[in-house]
Image 1 (cartoon, rainbow, N blue to C red):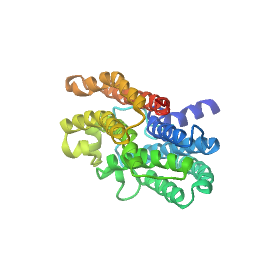
Image 2 (image 1 turned 45 degrees about the vertical axis):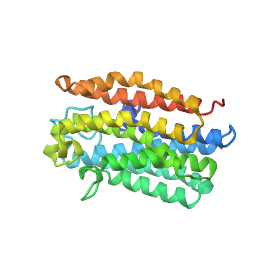
Image 3 (image 1 turned 90 degrees about the vertical axis):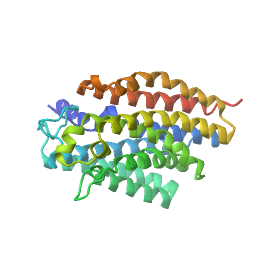
Image 4 (image 1 turned 30 degrees about the horizontal axis):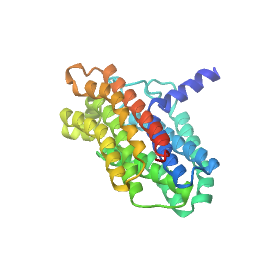
Amino acid sequence: MASSKLKIWILGIRPKTLAASIAPVLMGLGAAFYDRHFSLHLSSAILTLLTAVLIQAGTNLSNDLFDYIKGADNQKRVGPLRIMQSGFVTKKEMFLGIFIVFFLASVCGIFLVIRGGLPILIVGILSIICGFLYTAGPHPIGYMGLGEIFVLVFFGIIAFSGTYYVQTLAFFPMLIVMGLIPGFFSVAVLSANNLRDIKTDKEAGKNTLAVKFGYRFAVCEYIFCMIMPYLLLIVVIFVLRNHYFSLLSLTSIFFAIRPLKMAANKKNHTPAVLISVLEKTGHVMLIFALVFCVTWNIKI
């Protein structure tokens, strides 16, 4: 019984989407490892990764709850199983689950604040509040077409540069550009999700950009967000005139060809296909991040 309940909660945190929090942290650690002369503050690295994953898990659980309450997740929904919609947990259990996950994220975050100070405290509080308000409240972020901005900032710029800052206690403008790399990948994951849910989101009044601007826009948005990380990496290397081996991260585009083709072929857009696009996008993101971590630290 306990094991089946655990499986339900694991399903609720949507593990196949967690690349969005893992990849920017890995990339931030890779960049910091080089600038710390090939060393890491190991406990902070582990806690940063754990905090990021917990915040995303809490956000995903909040989305599950409030999308159900607001009617976006109903019987017409075509995506992966949602635990509230399926009746696996009660509202009371879900609220408790959300509280526990965000509480654990806060506990981990306290140790990061001790190291990183006020900037990390502000970022941590904002991340949890915005994660909850993504679908909660009278004016949820995800229902106003601001989801892409939220994801680009929090799962891109903040996750990457925050990770780097905790390690080095330093910040410079290029970190913002570098943070956009995993950020655009995360927006691509969101775009694939919104493309799949465009019909039910429209009926529920969830005004994502896909709902506002239509199906063709959503496809173009996905393709754009999948291409941008590769272009941005080239820009970063050109400006820094260093880390040339990290261009090997571009080879991950071979894994991106399949989901790009699937997204571009509107005739074959079944729910199963679009779910596969989302999953494959997460895989590409992780491959890119892992190759980046290694190759960024190769000296010529």
